[in-house]
Length: 437
Image 1: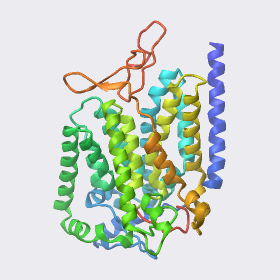
Image 2: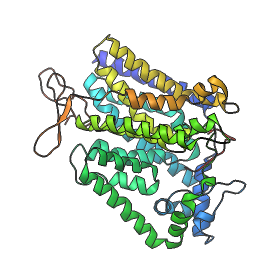
Image 3: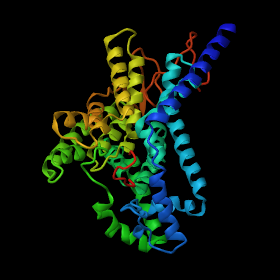
């Protein structure tokens, strides 16, 4: 008992020390964007509801930026128009924190149980590290919706789809209707032959989009015929914050970026993604499917601002998972742990901003696109749990670890007690060309 108490006390002290260290780091490294994007949402909704203007006509005073999301997103955010500004900030931050906590718990809890780690301690450490992660702190400081969308997709791929739930696909459909880019997960469902979930996601996206169209016909007409195609609302493609393949090509020749070169890179990247996603699906590894699709979405999207790279979080967590699962003191464990540490470290360091003003030369090409290289490395090198294979008449994944131990829906072997029974409880930086996207 005394030893357990000492261990708990040590963990509490460790977490407190980490919280202090992260807070000190954020006080220096975190850029205060003043909830710029949230101000755009708030201003557009207020203009729409209280001033009776058209939501897509609104531009934040002194800027070229307005509401860029589909009408269903406006419907979801509509209550914001009736809140004080301070309350809107609280809701935005709280929502990001809550869904981030749940998503990280889903990904890490099976790992901590398998390894015999203290579960609350692992979650606390992970949340501290997530707070320091640049895309996460940018998401919070801009008042962005990235983690909410990742959570919706995670509900489908981490919880509902592995269980064969008939509602699988609803989260992806809602995320797609709020912001179009998560629609790549519908393609993921199609290429991995999850027909029912794919139909559910498409039906959901279409249904709520039609609902928004019926409620707001003028706004819907404006978005689908005009606002969606207005590239001037997006921002400068060559700006260093655009960590997509399109950004790489644009920075090579900002005045005349090659569309052909970009399309060739996109096609090659998509081919790798299709190949690896099918392999993950064949192994019943939905977490890796989520991670691979998040990475490819960041790569092929014309614009991937740094805050969009929260979609790489599942891949980084899975690297830790694989490192823990590897034999102790093995080369594989060391390589995977180093990959996770270096990837996380670079994505936390703000390194790309060193080339904000001048991204020319070899150093500009290599350093200014650092986050793109990490996304590519994760897409190509992230391991797949090949021991989990779909079997049975229902086509649901029955998973077994290398030694025959049962594996959870996330593809992680369950922690087994010494008696062989189940484990207990098992049961932008200021001054950048900002955009709201």
